[in-house]
Amino acid sequence: MFERESLRICGLLKPRPSFLKHMDLILTRRLFFLVLMMTACLAGCGDLPRDPKETLRHARGGHLRVGLVEHPPWVIRTEGEPAGAEVELVRRFAAELGATPEWYWGGEQQHMEALRYYQLDLVIGGMTDGTPWKKYVGLTSPYFEERIKVGVPGTMPPSTSVKGMQVAVRGGEATASYLEGKGAIPVRVDDLSQANLPVAAPNWQLEQIGLTVTEIELLTEKHVWATPPGENGFIKRLDEFLYRHGSEVKGLLQREVAKR
Image 1: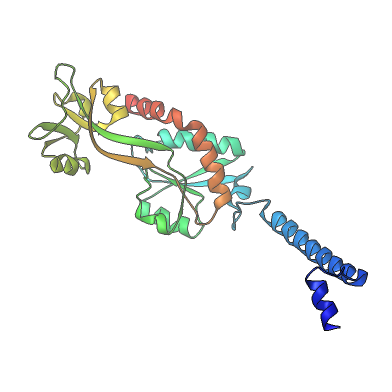
Image 2 (image 1 turned 135 degrees about the vertical axis):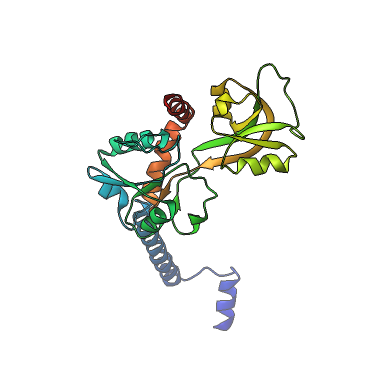
């Protein structure tokens, strides 16, 4: 008997019909369970990404709770309704959802803590992807890159270096330290448009002032919005919206500056 089984294994004898039937049954069962498992996985992944706290579902046709951190021209406090480039974008986003924005003014730490514990749906205020809060809250993908460059009046030849050069910069901003790092002499002013000097500012603002934008770049800031942690469906919806409207941000910023 051992010899017959050995020959059968080596292919010298044909397998018994009962053996073939048994193997066919095993393979059929395994295939069935494999299909069942794949179906279950696909069913479970069909509605990804998900919102554990259902932020997007609650916002649709309801209220969108928005934390505002004052940061002109992104977010501007007025005597009435808030203004600013990002405020305008949020209004458009809320309109797409059929939602009513609820505005809450406050500081960044206050709002980020509220966001972390799902007491707000969104926080805006000219934030960038370098925010230290990114470990605790959700962030959209960067939707606008702001390049901080040096612009010169038309009467000055474009330069490739600011070493030893006086450059106007808005007082109280970190841009001055980047200028110092390149050997420039920062001149802090309140109104960049009135400075009769080269100016360090976002490229969209240099263009608006009417300066020639040089190739001297100090830094790039990638702007984002903050959301509650883990609300990936909501973030995906925001990303889609911001991607569609990203080309409008420059114009919105320039318009807000021109109003003031």
